Length: 180
Image (cartoon, rainbow, N blue to C red):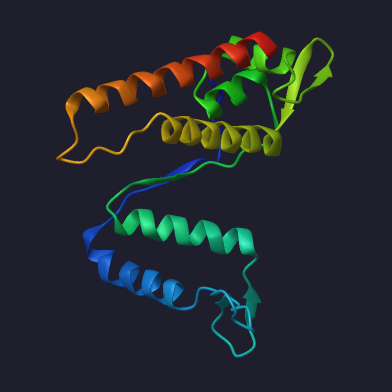
């Protein structure tokens, strides 16, 4: 069973807000720090009185950009705070794998975890880093098994190129599994 945080909330897009959201997205895009800019833009929350303001931290700014972009695209957004220490089940849910898979990743050293009593606890940053590394490996594997095909290419040649790419990918998998 997956424990749901008590303070989770889902925001639904409303077509009546599209103009306001588009204005926010345009503002954020226009003020992004570009390579070579001398001054980093600041984002503030402003109150009703003069001087009543607070600067947004970078994490809040990034979350705001993502939420506004998703709502403008017509997607619902769920804000669900997470603890920075995860159980193996929470890590599995975040990674989209089974709990035994997370345990195996811990056992082979791909995921760091600390033992609390008889249970493992994982640091959220470690799980997110692993998720990013896994995604990069998947993209690399896809790129290494791809073959550029032109309309005038000979189908027999393309078939041979694809076979060679599949063999190379299989050899890499065997090598990884034998070293694990």
